[in-house]
Structure formats: C-alpha cells, structure tokens
Length: 220
Image (cartoon, rainbow, N blue to C red):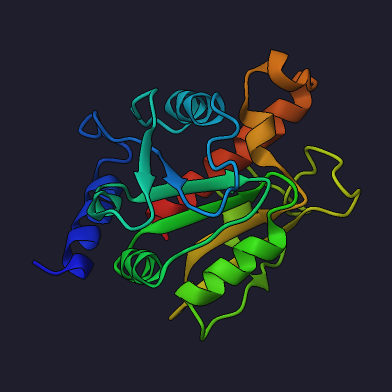
C-alpha cells in the first residue's frame, strides 16, 4: 500500500467519524522537527483544543495529543498535524519528501507562528512544495465560516510585532493542504488560562478559530 493510500484512508476515517461515536482514539498530533526551534511549546494547547472541539463540534478526540516526527511513517496515522515554535526549522530531504507525501495524500498541517518562526518555516515549507507559494486567504474563505464565523479573518491573540493577524494557505489542486496562522498565536490562546492570563473572551476567540481549522481540515 502506498503512502498516498495510507494517509487517504486515515483522513477518510477521520471524516467519516467526525460526527459519530466512532472516532474514539483519534488524536490531534504535534509535529516534531529539527533545527533548534521549540516545537514543544504550548504544551497545554492541544488538550484544550481537543476538549473544546469535543464540547462544540461533537467530536470525541482523546485529550492527550500525539507527538510525531516529520520523517516518521507514523505521520500517516494522523489526519491533522499542528506545528508551532519560536525559532529555526530544518527539514532534511527525506523529511520534506515524507511531509509532501502526507499532505498530497489527504493530510492537513496547521502551522502556528509562536513568534520568530516565520522566515524559517517559509524556507522549510518551500523545500516541501517548491512549486507553491503561501497565499493569504480572503476573509470570505470557508475556513473562517465553519462552526464559528470570523468576518475579519484571524483574531489577534498576542501582540508580537503589533502587525495584523494573517492566515496563509498552501493550495494544491484547489485544496488547502497547509494553513499558516501568522502574527496571531492561536496556540497561546488555547493554553491554560494561568499560562498567559489572557481574558476569557480572547481565549474563546482562539479556541473557536482552532475549532474552525479542525472542522475545515476534515470537511474540505
């Protein structure tokens, strides 16, 4: 069975069980990469997002997330990957090829710039898709109109460089295979409240947008 077929079946399983009781055991996954960037930042983020999705989307994600390396065959067991960090990102040729196969075969990657990641992640993803460029998704894009509506695109969660939050996509044959949230920091908003002491209203915006991304990934 080819890698394309394996990830397609994984994504199909996730889609079919999205609104049923059959997705017990399904996990969100955190991408582990090389280069020195802190891929492990925001440790409470994905458990809180999983809980929020379970409460608001009818999913039954496991609370504990999986950690998977870019070049591992285990990548194909998880239809939704989350990637974050503050610094350098390096993909070997084999890792870039593995991630490409995963995304072409039906997988989905959400990259969340936790500040300082932008130039490195753009270089790394160019190695995965040399023929593609990140394009900013318009506010009318379906990713902003899932369970929750965001008329002005990504919510601004943390100040960072005080730039406007932007949502970029890598689009392959009409499908967004990678969504990149920049100058937004959704993951910080997903973390336990005491970690960043954000107002509940701001945390709720981050969780709602996260739920939209998850739902879009499974339903596009």
